[in-house]
Image (cartoon, rainbow, N blue to C red; front, side, top):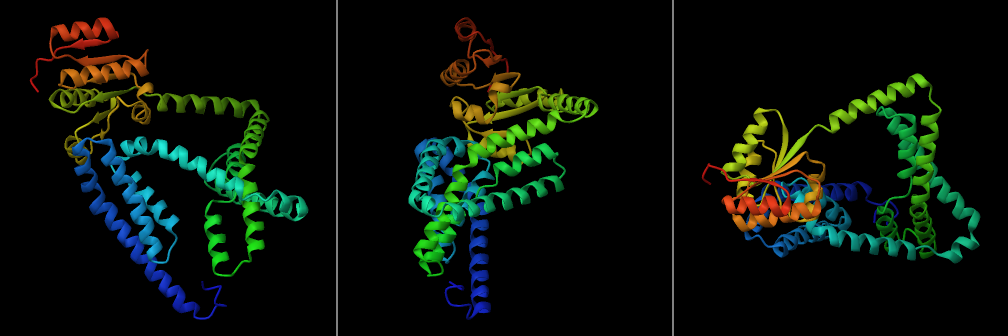
Length: 365
Protein backbone atom coordinates (compact mmCIF):
# COMPACT_ATOMS: atom_id res chain seq x y z
CA UNK A 1 0.00 0.00 0.00
CA UNK A 2 2.86 2.41 0.74
CA UNK A 3 4.37 1.93 -2.71
CA UNK A 4 0.94 2.16 -4.32
CA UNK A 5 0.48 5.60 -2.79
CA UNK A 6 3.69 6.90 -4.28
CA UNK A 7 5.49 6.96 -0.93
CA UNK A 8 3.30 9.68 0.62
CA UNK A 9 2.92 9.38 4.39
CA UNK A 10 5.68 6.83 4.61
CA UNK A 11 6.43 7.48 8.29
CA UNK A 12 2.80 7.23 9.35
CA UNK A 13 2.32 4.05 7.34
CA UNK A 14 5.41 2.42 8.82
CA UNK A 15 4.33 3.42 12.32
CA UNK A 16 0.88 1.94 11.77
CA UNK A 17 2.36 -1.26 10.39
CA UNK A 18 4.69 -1.50 13.39
CA UNK A 19 1.79 -1.09 15.84
CA UNK A 20 -0.26 -3.73 14.01
CA UNK A 21 2.65 -6.17 13.94
CA UNK A 22 3.32 -5.60 17.63
CA UNK A 23 -0.33 -6.20 18.51
CA UNK A 24 -0.47 -9.34 16.37
CA UNK A 25 2.74 -10.84 17.73
CA UNK A 26 1.78 -9.99 21.32
CA UNK A 27 -1.62 -11.61 20.93
CA UNK A 28 -0.11 -14.70 19.33
CA UNK A 29 2.58 -14.99 22.02
CA UNK A 30 -0.04 -14.62 24.77
CA UNK A 31 -2.23 -17.26 23.12
CA UNK A 32 0.67 -19.66 22.76
CA UNK A 33 1.99 -19.41 26.32
CA UNK A 34 -1.22 -18.92 28.29
CA UNK A 35 -4.12 -20.39 26.31
CA UNK A 36 -2.83 -23.25 24.13
CA UNK A 37 -1.44 -25.61 26.78
CA UNK A 38 -4.54 -25.54 29.05
CA UNK A 39 -6.80 -25.80 25.99
CA UNK A 40 -5.01 -28.85 24.57
CA UNK A 41 -4.83 -30.36 28.04
CA UNK A 42 -8.63 -30.14 28.32
CA UNK A 43 -9.14 -31.57 24.85
CA UNK A 44 -6.65 -34.40 25.48
CA UNK A 45 -8.71 -35.53 28.47
CA UNK A 46 -11.62 -36.22 26.12
CA UNK A 47 -9.40 -38.73 24.27
CA UNK A 48 -11.05 -38.06 20.91
CA UNK A 49 -8.93 -37.53 17.85
CA UNK A 50 -11.62 -35.37 16.20
CA UNK A 51 -11.62 -32.83 19.04
CA UNK A 52 -7.82 -32.69 19.05
CA UNK A 53 -7.73 -32.13 15.30
CA UNK A 54 -10.50 -29.54 15.48
CA UNK A 55 -8.67 -27.44 18.06
CA UNK A 56 -5.47 -27.63 16.01
CA UNK A 57 -7.20 -26.38 12.87
CA UNK A 58 -9.07 -23.74 14.88
CA UNK A 59 -5.76 -22.43 16.23
CA UNK A 60 -4.24 -22.11 12.77
CA UNK A 61 -7.32 -20.54 11.16
CA UNK A 62 -7.94 -18.21 14.11
CA UNK A 63 -4.42 -16.78 14.06
CA UNK A 64 -4.53 -16.53 10.29
CA UNK A 65 -7.77 -14.50 10.38
CA UNK A 66 -6.43 -12.35 13.20
CA UNK A 67 -3.31 -11.27 11.31
CA UNK A 68 -5.38 -10.66 8.19
CA UNK A 69 -7.78 -8.49 10.20
CA UNK A 70 -4.84 -6.41 11.42
CA UNK A 71 -3.71 -5.79 7.87
CA UNK A 72 -0.92 -8.35 7.83
CA UNK A 73 -0.60 -11.49 5.75
CA UNK A 74 -2.86 -14.37 6.74
CA UNK A 75 -0.03 -16.67 5.68
CA UNK A 76 2.12 -15.09 8.39
CA UNK A 77 -0.53 -15.91 10.98
CA UNK A 78 -0.69 -19.53 9.87
CA UNK A 79 3.10 -19.76 9.97
CA UNK A 80 3.28 -18.34 13.51
CA UNK A 81 0.51 -20.69 14.62
CA UNK A 82 2.58 -23.61 13.37
CA UNK A 83 5.58 -22.36 15.32
CA UNK A 84 3.54 -22.15 18.53
CA UNK A 85 1.99 -25.59 18.05
CA UNK A 86 5.44 -27.09 17.52
CA UNK A 87 6.50 -25.74 20.94
CA UNK A 88 3.69 -27.38 22.92
CA UNK A 89 4.13 -30.69 24.73
CA UNK A 90 1.46 -32.17 22.43
CA UNK A 91 3.50 -31.56 19.27
CA UNK A 92 3.96 -35.26 18.42
CA UNK A 93 0.24 -35.96 18.63
CA UNK A 94 -0.52 -32.82 16.61
CA UNK A 95 1.98 -33.81 13.92
CA UNK A 96 0.40 -37.26 13.62
CA UNK A 97 -3.15 -35.88 13.45
CA UNK A 98 -2.43 -33.34 10.70
CA UNK A 99 -0.29 -35.71 8.60
CA UNK A 100 -3.11 -36.57 6.12
CA UNK A 101 -3.98 -32.88 5.66
CA UNK A 102 -0.33 -32.00 5.23
CA UNK A 103 0.08 -34.38 2.32
CA UNK A 104 -3.12 -33.24 0.61
CA UNK A 105 -2.43 -29.54 1.05
CA UNK A 106 1.19 -29.85 -0.07
CA UNK A 107 0.01 -31.64 -3.19
CA UNK A 108 -2.60 -28.95 -3.81
CA UNK A 109 0.02 -26.22 -3.32
CA UNK A 110 2.38 -27.70 -5.88
CA UNK A 111 -0.47 -28.21 -8.32
CA UNK A 112 -1.29 -24.49 -8.05
CA UNK A 113 2.41 -23.73 -8.52
CA UNK A 114 2.35 -25.70 -11.75
CA UNK A 115 -0.67 -23.74 -12.94
CA UNK A 116 1.31 -20.50 -12.52
CA UNK A 117 3.77 -21.54 -15.23
CA UNK A 118 2.73 -19.91 -18.50
CA UNK A 119 4.32 -22.06 -21.19
CA UNK A 120 3.51 -19.53 -23.91
CA UNK A 121 5.18 -16.75 -21.94
CA UNK A 122 8.28 -18.89 -21.37
CA UNK A 123 8.61 -19.69 -25.08
CA UNK A 124 7.99 -16.11 -26.20
CA UNK A 125 10.45 -14.58 -23.72
CA UNK A 126 12.86 -17.45 -23.21
CA UNK A 127 16.08 -15.39 -22.85
CA UNK A 128 14.56 -12.99 -20.28
CA UNK A 129 12.85 -15.80 -18.31
CA UNK A 130 16.06 -17.82 -18.28
CA UNK A 131 18.07 -14.84 -17.07
CA UNK A 132 15.65 -14.10 -14.21
CA UNK A 133 15.42 -17.73 -13.13
CA UNK A 134 19.17 -18.23 -13.20
CA UNK A 135 19.67 -14.91 -11.41
CA UNK A 136 17.34 -15.93 -8.55
CA UNK A 137 19.02 -19.31 -8.21
CA UNK A 138 22.54 -17.85 -8.35
CA UNK A 139 21.92 -15.09 -5.79
CA UNK A 140 20.17 -17.35 -3.28
CA UNK A 141 22.73 -20.12 -3.73
CA UNK A 142 25.61 -17.70 -3.19
CA UNK A 143 24.06 -16.24 -0.03
CA UNK A 144 23.25 -19.69 1.37
CA UNK A 145 26.73 -21.03 0.59
CA UNK A 146 28.48 -18.09 2.25
CA UNK A 147 26.21 -18.33 5.30
CA UNK A 148 26.86 -22.07 5.60
CA UNK A 149 30.62 -21.56 5.39
CA UNK A 150 30.41 -18.77 7.97
CA UNK A 151 28.69 -21.15 10.39
CA UNK A 152 31.48 -23.70 10.03
CA UNK A 153 30.00 -26.19 7.57
CA UNK A 154 32.29 -27.92 5.10
CA UNK A 155 32.53 -26.79 1.49
CA UNK A 156 30.72 -29.87 0.20
CA UNK A 157 27.86 -29.48 2.67
CA UNK A 158 27.63 -25.75 1.97
CA UNK A 159 27.40 -26.32 -1.79
CA UNK A 160 24.74 -28.99 -1.40
CA UNK A 161 22.72 -26.84 1.00
CA UNK A 162 22.98 -23.82 -1.27
CA UNK A 163 21.57 -25.68 -4.27
CA UNK A 164 18.74 -27.22 -2.26
CA UNK A 165 17.48 -23.86 -0.91
CA UNK A 166 18.22 -21.74 -3.99
CA UNK A 167 14.61 -21.65 -5.24
CA UNK A 168 12.33 -18.67 -4.59
CA UNK A 169 10.13 -18.90 -1.51
CA UNK A 170 6.37 -19.44 -1.46
CA UNK A 171 5.87 -16.00 0.12
CA UNK A 172 6.60 -14.60 -3.34
CA UNK A 173 3.06 -15.64 -4.32
CA UNK A 174 1.68 -13.60 -1.42
CA UNK A 175 3.89 -10.57 -2.07
CA UNK A 176 3.28 -10.44 -5.82
CA UNK A 177 -0.44 -11.00 -5.32
CA UNK A 178 -0.63 -8.03 -2.96
CA UNK A 179 1.48 -5.92 -5.33
CA UNK A 180 -0.95 -6.70 -8.14
CA UNK A 181 -4.03 -5.89 -6.03
CA UNK A 182 -2.59 -2.48 -5.06
CA UNK A 183 -1.60 -1.62 -8.61
CA UNK A 184 2.16 -1.76 -8.03
CA UNK A 185 2.58 -4.50 -10.63
CA UNK A 186 0.56 -4.96 -13.78
CA UNK A 187 -1.12 -8.32 -14.46
CA UNK A 188 1.51 -9.07 -17.14
CA UNK A 189 4.40 -8.30 -14.79
CA UNK A 190 2.83 -10.40 -12.04
CA UNK A 191 2.35 -13.32 -14.40
CA UNK A 192 5.95 -13.07 -15.56
CA UNK A 193 7.34 -13.01 -12.00
CA UNK A 194 5.11 -15.85 -10.79
CA UNK A 195 6.17 -17.94 -13.78
CA UNK A 196 9.84 -17.39 -12.91
CA UNK A 197 9.25 -18.23 -9.24
CA UNK A 198 7.40 -21.42 -10.19
CA UNK A 199 10.19 -22.49 -12.51
CA UNK A 200 12.77 -22.14 -9.73
CA UNK A 201 10.62 -24.44 -7.57
CA UNK A 202 10.21 -26.93 -10.40
CA UNK A 203 14.01 -27.11 -10.74
CA UNK A 204 14.53 -27.99 -7.05
CA UNK A 205 14.63 -31.82 -7.45
CA UNK A 206 17.20 -31.47 -10.25
CA UNK A 207 19.31 -29.03 -8.22
CA UNK A 208 19.14 -31.33 -5.21
CA UNK A 209 20.49 -34.20 -7.29
CA UNK A 210 23.25 -32.00 -8.72
CA UNK A 211 24.14 -30.79 -5.23
CA UNK A 212 24.55 -34.35 -4.01
CA UNK A 213 26.84 -35.21 -6.89
CA UNK A 214 28.94 -32.07 -6.39
CA UNK A 215 29.28 -32.84 -2.67
CA UNK A 216 30.40 -36.39 -3.47
CA UNK A 217 33.02 -35.13 -5.93
CA UNK A 218 34.37 -32.62 -3.42
CA UNK A 219 34.64 -35.31 -0.77
CA UNK A 220 36.44 -37.66 -3.16
CA UNK A 221 38.96 -34.95 -4.01
CA UNK A 222 40.23 -34.63 -0.45
CA UNK A 223 43.55 -36.01 0.66
CA UNK A 224 43.86 -39.42 2.32
CA UNK A 225 44.69 -37.81 5.64
CA UNK A 226 41.56 -35.70 5.59
CA UNK A 227 39.52 -38.71 4.59
CA UNK A 228 40.81 -40.66 7.58
CA UNK A 229 39.88 -37.76 9.86
CA UNK A 230 36.43 -37.62 8.32
CA UNK A 231 35.91 -41.35 8.87
CA UNK A 232 37.02 -41.06 12.49
CA UNK A 233 34.75 -38.08 13.05
CA UNK A 234 31.86 -39.94 11.45
CA UNK A 235 32.49 -42.97 13.66
CA UNK A 236 32.57 -40.76 16.75
CA UNK A 237 29.30 -39.12 15.75
CA UNK A 238 27.77 -42.53 15.10
CA UNK A 239 28.70 -43.73 18.57
CA UNK A 240 27.17 -40.60 20.10
CA UNK A 241 24.04 -40.70 17.97
CA UNK A 242 23.54 -44.45 18.40
CA UNK A 243 23.67 -44.45 22.20
CA UNK A 244 21.16 -47.02 23.48
CA UNK A 245 17.84 -45.64 24.58
CA UNK A 246 14.67 -47.27 25.80
CA UNK A 247 11.05 -46.33 25.19
CA UNK A 248 8.77 -46.69 28.20
CA UNK A 249 5.04 -46.82 27.47
CA UNK A 250 2.94 -45.69 30.42
CA UNK A 251 3.89 -43.52 33.37
CA UNK A 252 1.88 -45.04 36.18
CA UNK A 253 3.32 -46.51 39.37
CA UNK A 254 5.29 -49.20 37.55
CA UNK A 255 6.32 -46.79 34.80
CA UNK A 256 7.78 -44.41 37.37
CA UNK A 257 9.75 -47.24 38.98
CA UNK A 258 11.11 -48.32 35.59
CA UNK A 259 12.11 -44.79 34.51
CA UNK A 260 13.73 -44.11 37.90
CA UNK A 261 15.77 -47.29 37.54
CA UNK A 262 16.82 -46.39 34.00
CA UNK A 263 17.85 -42.92 35.15
CA UNK A 264 19.92 -44.30 38.01
CA UNK A 265 21.68 -46.64 35.59
CA UNK A 266 22.34 -43.68 33.24
CA UNK A 267 20.32 -45.29 30.45
CA UNK A 268 18.64 -42.81 28.12
CA UNK A 269 14.90 -43.19 27.84
CA UNK A 270 11.76 -41.48 26.65
CA UNK A 271 8.37 -42.20 28.13
CA UNK A 272 5.04 -41.94 26.31
CA UNK A 273 1.84 -41.54 28.33
CA UNK A 274 -1.79 -41.27 27.13
CA UNK A 275 -2.91 -39.48 30.27
CA UNK A 276 -2.31 -35.76 29.62
CA UNK A 277 -2.26 -34.83 33.32
CA UNK A 278 0.46 -37.36 34.13
CA UNK A 279 2.50 -36.30 31.11
CA UNK A 280 2.17 -32.62 31.98
CA UNK A 281 3.15 -33.21 35.62
CA UNK A 282 6.23 -35.19 34.63
CA UNK A 283 7.23 -32.62 32.00
CA UNK A 284 6.98 -29.85 34.59
CA UNK A 285 9.66 -31.74 36.53
CA UNK A 286 11.94 -31.83 33.50
CA UNK A 287 11.43 -35.52 32.75
CA UNK A 288 11.32 -36.85 29.16
CA UNK A 289 7.66 -37.87 29.37
CA UNK A 290 5.44 -37.00 26.40
CA UNK A 291 1.77 -37.27 25.60
CA UNK A 292 0.87 -39.65 22.77
CA UNK A 293 -0.40 -43.06 21.74
CA UNK A 294 2.47 -45.10 20.27
CA UNK A 295 0.03 -47.77 19.10
CA UNK A 296 -0.48 -45.42 16.16
CA UNK A 297 2.34 -45.97 13.63
CA UNK A 298 2.86 -42.30 12.82
CA UNK A 299 3.33 -41.41 16.49
CA UNK A 300 5.65 -44.37 17.04
CA UNK A 301 7.77 -43.14 14.13
CA UNK A 302 7.85 -39.64 15.61
CA UNK A 303 9.38 -41.08 18.79
CA UNK A 304 11.88 -43.25 16.81
CA UNK A 305 10.52 -46.37 18.49
CA UNK A 306 12.04 -48.53 15.75
CA UNK A 307 15.55 -47.31 16.69
CA UNK A 308 15.15 -48.06 20.40
CA UNK A 309 17.08 -50.85 22.07
CA UNK A 310 13.88 -52.01 23.73
CA UNK A 311 10.33 -50.99 24.57
CA UNK A 312 8.90 -51.49 28.05
CA UNK A 313 5.11 -51.48 28.26
CA UNK A 314 3.98 -50.71 31.82
CA UNK A 315 0.25 -50.18 31.21
CA UNK A 316 -1.93 -51.55 34.02
CA UNK A 317 -5.10 -52.16 32.01
CA UNK A 318 -5.04 -55.67 30.55
CA UNK A 319 -6.89 -54.92 27.31
CA UNK A 320 -4.99 -51.70 26.69
CA UNK A 321 -1.62 -53.37 27.32
CA UNK A 322 -2.51 -56.17 24.91
CA UNK A 323 -3.58 -53.68 22.24
CA UNK A 324 -0.34 -51.75 22.65
CA UNK A 325 1.87 -54.84 22.44
CA UNK A 326 0.06 -56.15 19.36
CA UNK A 327 0.42 -52.81 17.58
CA UNK A 328 4.13 -52.53 18.41
CA UNK A 329 4.89 -56.10 17.39
CA UNK A 330 3.03 -55.69 14.11
CA UNK A 331 5.01 -52.57 13.24
CA UNK A 332 8.41 -53.68 14.62
CA UNK A 333 8.77 -57.47 14.29
CA UNK A 334 12.39 -57.55 15.50
CA UNK A 335 12.08 -55.12 18.39
CA UNK A 336 12.67 -56.29 21.97
CA UNK A 337 9.49 -55.75 23.95
CA UNK A 338 9.04 -56.14 27.68
CA UNK A 339 5.45 -55.93 28.85
CA UNK A 340 3.55 -55.81 32.10
CA UNK A 341 0.97 -58.58 32.41
CA UNK A 342 -2.16 -58.60 34.53
CA UNK A 343 -1.68 -62.20 35.69
CA UNK A 344 0.29 -65.34 34.96
CA UNK A 345 -2.13 -66.51 32.27
CA UNK A 346 -1.92 -63.13 30.53
CA UNK A 347 1.88 -63.22 30.67
CA UNK A 348 2.00 -66.72 29.18
CA UNK A 349 -0.30 -65.79 26.29
CA UNK A 350 1.69 -62.68 25.47
CA UNK A 351 4.99 -64.57 25.47
CA UNK A 352 3.74 -67.42 23.31
CA UNK A 353 1.79 -65.46 20.72
CA UNK A 354 3.82 -62.25 20.40
CA UNK A 355 7.38 -63.31 21.26
CA UNK A 356 7.86 -60.80 24.07
CA UNK A 357 9.03 -60.90 27.66
CA UNK A 358 6.02 -60.50 29.95
CA UNK A 359 5.93 -60.44 33.72
CA UNK A 360 3.50 -59.72 36.53
CA UNK A 361 4.73 -56.90 38.80
CA UNK A 362 4.41 -57.18 42.56
CA UNK A 363 3.91 -53.41 42.88
CA UNK A 364 0.20 -52.48 42.96
CA UNK A 365 -0.94 -49.70 40.62
